[in-house]
Image: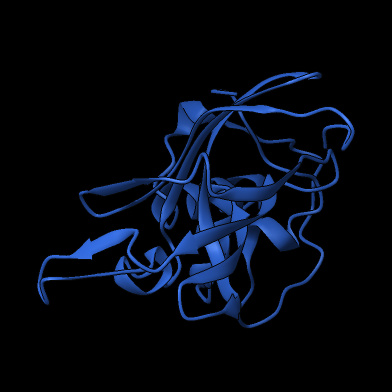
Length: 184
């Protein structure tokens, strides 16, 4: 997280849903980006203020807010390039949750909880299949068949173990050591 006393420059900050891309650069009031060695996911939180006529609803031929007209329902892609005192951060994250914090007649404040693609997939994909063989091979099979990753993108530790063997579990939460991607 950047030092609050130093401002950051948003070179790009936009939300994408389907074929629509909407700039959030001059609407954003806060953006907090989190990375941790203890978590397999990158997360961020952001808030933005929007005016009532910011976006046109093509179906109803009227203007409305980004939150209601796009609408933001979860899974939208946030693309950003932020130049801060600590360096340049360039990433794509996805909306996990969106909350309308304050709605007035001509503006509203919206808070977004963002997560990496892997975090969103981990939240949406539950695994309830039975696997035989080594844990490394089982995790590899889950990540390639359920998450669509390629074998050459994986770097699994053969000493890792599954913490919980429930009927249904979230692979990235249950795997003892974070799964790293070779593409990073």
